[in-house]
Image 1: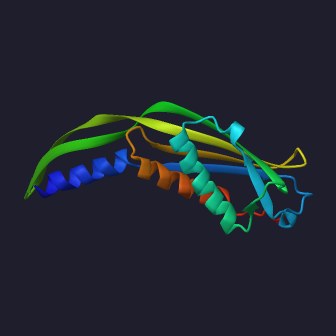
Image 2: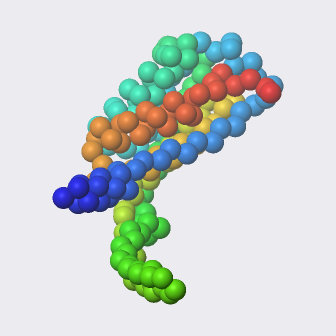
Length: 177
């Protein structure tokens, strides 16, 4: 029974894994500390209303943490371009093995059998290209890729997006190193 519980826990971990990948670039000549207000162009958000609301809530909260606030006459105009697609992966497998052996005095015997069970999974890939503009000039761009299981709950998706947005905005405002 313990083995069944352990095996089930491993499978749930494999199937519920989420990943977030981020990439950021910016204009090194811009002083980002001067920007205090922003407005997100909702025209660029081509997604259903529930996903849009969830993403905007998470992203606005993170921008507020960074000291930015929404304004009708903003310092920054922000565009978010989402892209969603499903992908299949078969890079995981579960090995099941059996073996036996006997070691007596003066000799030994050994043997074993094992096989792999491939695990196919479908992942939902959520890509977001986020661009900051100052007077219609691109000054900052971030790419966020969030990957979750096809059957992930809204809460799991939200947690993955939240984690990804925090990762994306970790070093904002950017500083030259």
